[in-house]
Length: 418
Image (cartoon, rainbow, N blue to C red; front, side, top):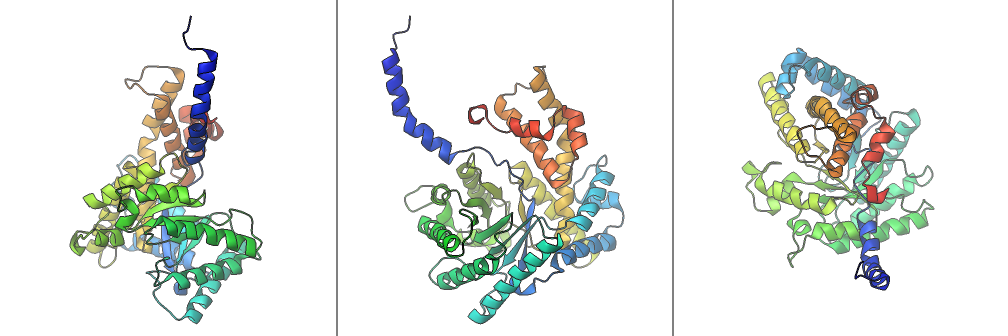
């Protein structure tokens, strides 16, 4: 007979109830929606209706000029010989069909300071181009704008551009997959301001509530560690009130802010790994996606230089994915071949072992690894991400696991949230 009375247990439930509700709201679970494998930044004044196709054609031209042998290119990209032909074929098909998954029109560093009249015109023209691509059925699945920061020196211009963009979208509505990137965030108050701006613009332009979402670019040391020692980025996610779509690491701004010499600024510097580890913990379970940064060592020049740039980029893409960052930035069309090749190889090389491990877990069979439900969630997430980016086909996943996509999606949700 228990010494714990029903009344006592009821009081415990009442005491724990508020924290149960708060935790469920703050941590709704892992990211279940499709997340792009990269973001391609194009300055607003350089965007035209052909930009997406230009990037794809440029990527294919780089392959033709510098790596006509698929096996040789696959080796440069770190792809194993068993996967070489399949990965390269899928990469070429992707570059022909959908070269950019996430297009970010840049009004910040890549665009620079212009007159108010010119930035107004470029912002409005870029919206018109995105809507034109949408009407033609060739818009990338994810699009958006990077505005200037809400720091004092650029605040008025940033807000003006944001309203210009929203006003131009008002007639057609906010497209699916649309996001605003807020750079160089230094305080939670800037996130509060961004939420207030989104609310006012939605109301003023008769847009659906919560249709405006934004990404936080983590480019300042203040975003990682506040003056009181707290992880500021965690507070920023909470302050975003459900509008934060992602955290994007800014390689070079953050490195410079941390005092790292230019020659040693890199996605794999220990300071970068520390910042990204804090971002990862802050975002875990919140439904906020993560993106790594970029490398400014581009695969351009003669063939030797292109090969060196490809090898570096592919290695960094693979490194990011192994650490749980499944998205990154690309700055040049010639980076797209290694973005997709490294991404596809990551999922294809792991398909068989992941499927076997998941199947054994579900069957209760011994696999030599003592897996738990959380591992099954991670395995299902891995397979779904491979499906989303085109690395693997539904028939391959179903054939190896016996599970449909819907069944995999259900496995990704923890039991207490179902």
